[in-house]
Length: 246
Image 1 (cartoon, rainbow, N blue to C red):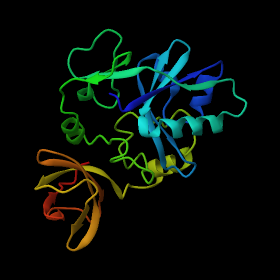
Image 2: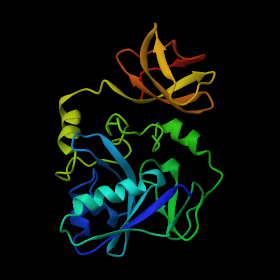
Image 3: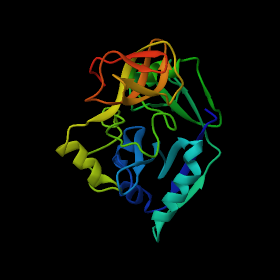
Image 4: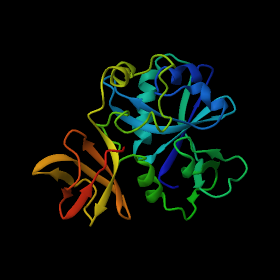
């Protein structure tokens, strides 16, 4: 996986520092890989990543397009905390077959297999888009962007947020969405007949309904306004059907 970068956080205050910033409970690294996000104070997405323990240090596995901005944001929050943030030469391998020694299970869904951190990068021959589409799992830079809210993106279902861990940046907005509202918009797996580019607007009865994203076979991930969505939607020349399941 050459499109990933691994940041190392080290120092006496590393765990406490990260705990106050991200959506998941850092203490879970004692049991395995942790999926989490960093949000704006307004609760919008900045970056998603995996957190792994490496001795007393923490490794952050993030898409390369977000690595520099994530390191910069963490440095801004660091203030006088006794931590060091640096990019490493570590690489990521992943697969869905038998896990090699030292590999960690992907916490988002069992079908996503394992991730291994070391000198070698690479994927096996798994159809990752098909797995993501089947389970409505968003990808950095495709379904996940600056306007995303993590609950609309399914982070609770994907083990990416902990509502018992206490405060973090953007926690108030996220908690309000969880406890006080029914989600009116969000990601869903839809049926597709035909093809349309990622980012194509979905319409129904000549009204905008959402956006089409990753496609695999006759299915796709779409961002939908649920009160307008249903059968007989279209994205350019592609027919889009949704049966009310995210």
